[in-house]
Image (cartoon, one colour):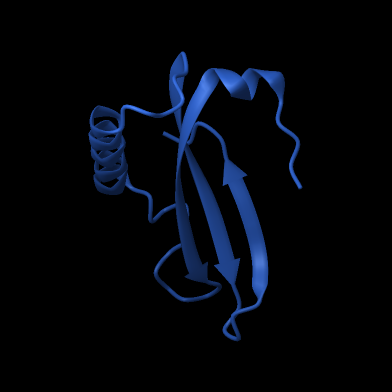
Length: 86
């Protein structure tokens, strides 16, 4: 269980989760959230904000990335949460 910090209550957070296999040759999960994916996530967030009237209202937005790395058998190797990744 994670503990929320008081400052987190100021943000509405959109989070992109990427999973990659270790040694897969396609780069890591963080590299998969390149500028085109960042634009797509921002566009989806903007659409959701425009369409969803009953939602939390916060002072600011934040875009996080959760990077999941698994081994060839699907077991977790690494899990990283990058706050304010883009």
